[in-house]
Amino acid sequence: MARPKRTETGVTKSSGDDCVVLRGVSVPLISDLGGAFITDCSRNRERLMNDDRICEKYGIAPEAYQNFAKNKELRLKIDAEHERRVRNGDAARESAAKLFAEAPEVLGEILNDKQANARHRIEAAKELRATANPGAENTNNAAERFVININLGEDHKLLIDKPIRPLTPEEAKRELDAEK
Image (cartoon, rainbow, N blue to C red; front, side, top):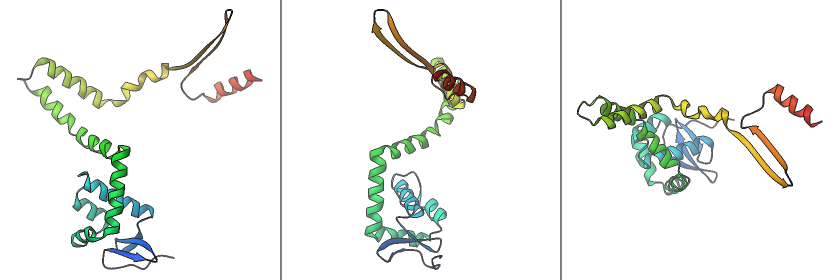
C-alpha cells in the first residue's frame, strides 16, 4: 500500500521511525532512498554536492532544506555517515575524482604553453595520453600467471603454472577431463 502524499517537506516521526518527506512522499531514513539522501547530505558536507543539487534531486524546497539543519536525529545520521565515509576513504576518493576531472585542462595548458620547460610539456603529454586511454595500463594482465613451485627434495618438484584469467569453456572441459 502506498503512503499518502504530503504537500510540505520536512522530517517527521512515523511510528517510531525517522522519516523525511522527499518529493511529497514520507520516506523512512532507514530505507534505500533515505540512506541515499543521508549519503548525499554527507557529500554536501564534504563540498562534493551543493544545496541546490540536493534540492533538485530530491524535490525539496530550499526553505524546507534549511529546516533539516534543525533536526537533531537527521544531523546525527548525517554526521555518522560522514564519519564512516572519511574512515573508509570514500570521501577522499570522491574528492580526488572531482579534482582529477580538472587535470586534463591543466595539463593541456602546460602542453600548449610555449614558455613552459620542454620536460614539463613532455610529461604533460604523457599524462594526457595515460588519462585518455586508461585501459592501456592493464594490457599486461593477459601475460600474468599464477605460479606455485614446491621443491620436494631429491630433484622432485611440484609445479603449478596457470594464467590469471577465467578459463574458456573448452579449457575448463580439458582440465576436468585431465583430472579424471
